[in-house]
Length: 356
Image (cartoon, rainbow, N blue to C red; front, side):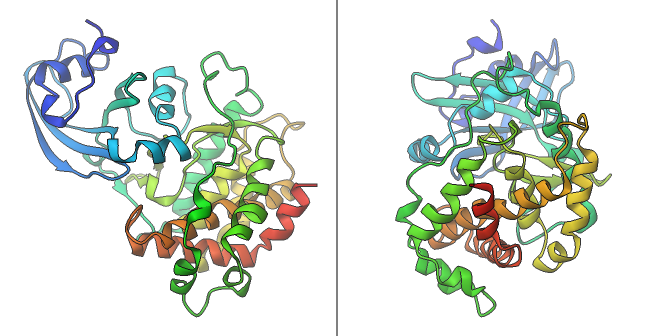
């Protein structure tokens, strides 16, 4: 029986040694798992666990990271991301050209709107997962920028019609965020919050800032996007390489989405102000594209300025929801960073220029 025929377990205790042996077989032929135990469980929008393995035969990883759908959040995922994008991306076996965890098995049950992924535990490789409370330095962010540029360049204007990525959806606006109680988030931003942000209503944030920017993503050069490249989906390796986790929002669209969302949230406000011009140059230099396709420095700057719309909207809405989606300290730190960037980069005028 191949891995595609494996039944989807409904909880971690259903991942038996026999099941896990088949899940690992493609990467570790002949391996025979003897025992499976739960080291760590962390349920959020999806269910996640680190499982510890022992072996009766062959050699495999001592731990694996497993991700599965959470029934309580299926409708949220359906609205904002797409249940099957991450497993489909790794089942397509397209090279991503940046650091990411190895995926041993990705199983989809479309009838029950469910999935399970068994992947590398990057902690075992010395990875240091980051979040907004532990930002990157400018030099560390440069490694992430180069990785995104490598991936973007490989699929630049080649993602539509790609034989293995035909399922990949365009990045388009979704509905639902307009119910967020925005004043609750604005109250938390603090005394340094830009007046341009404090004056926003939820309707203006969604209809005048976020949606106009998102609509530009499919009118400009298309590439493969991570789609959710905020710092909480990154990790740092000992050699300085930055890896990207959680590809559930993978889409096709304009490069600016990934670049801006990553940089504006991964750096402190001061480091972003100090280093962003250099980092935009690093991104352009790392794009391995023919001269006719390479965006000009002015085009990169304009797209980057406009891209603040996405991080600003998502993290103000997240911060308004208390602990429902994210730890409040993380949501607030990101809302503050994207708010400062919105004022610093005059995002409103950049969106207006891109939308012409």
